[in-house]
Length: 338
Image 1 (cartoon, rainbow, N blue to C red):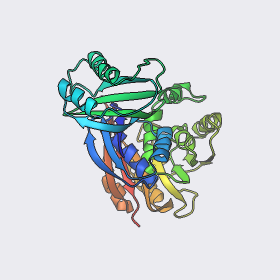
Image 2 (image 1 turned 45 degrees about the vertical axis):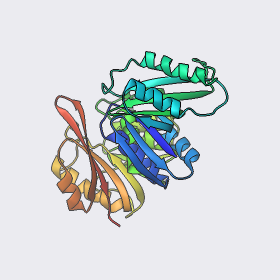
Image 3 (image 1 turned 180 degrees about the vertical axis):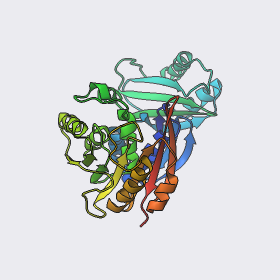
Image 4 (image 1 turned 60 degrees about the vertical axis):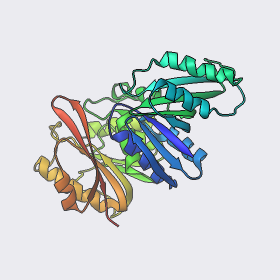
């Protein structure tokens, strides 16, 4: 079955990585058919319903998930011909929405929705714009149009409600919930997720809300107490430790995922010989406590590929996120070899 994921436009690479990581974590039998700007089309062989339900509950950087009924060219007549050719047989009322990705298409989406509606009407279907029983979508991206029925939509408002300043304890300079959740998904956690520089607990909250047991550590007591307030507010399964990330009080190979955003110079309370020392030694500690063949996602403002490789990691992905003029986050996805 062909499934299209309509991706968030807030980042170029993280949304695709999040979807693919979720599919791999679920052991889905799939292949990528088309990797387009704003849309990822996957052929899933079996267990589609359970996979879609799980991803829709976890994903942060996907807007909609649709079952692909047909694909065609970008022109108006090409789109109409493609929809008519792939008109599904269904009962009940419907509505249809046409979505442009960026500025690839100049088509008037409202007029196109009306034209498609006429095709449905000619086939004896009844529209209900407010409360349809079946929803259809046409996605216009690059040189393709994708027609399908809606399987699921991600409720992005829940991430808005967890913005840092809306939590019980707030401290500036932290990851936004959608980014934190996406990085958690990319780390592919199964049971235990570690953040050795947990700060106010934003990453831990996102991990805990998808049912992962989360472990956090920090060297600032005030911040750690704030993290406790936030984690208890969202009722997640957590453990917090007042500890140095360079000397983790955890057994070798005891966690199956790590996601962390170190202070990288923003905090005056870094208790280490130097920032470089802290990053190098903490990287080695992360490597020690992570299980083999598992992932760590490390956020930094500077190139740290060499430190990661010196610690034993393999760099499998790199993402850049521009925060403002003087800060670009470098996000490394690392894997501990088998």
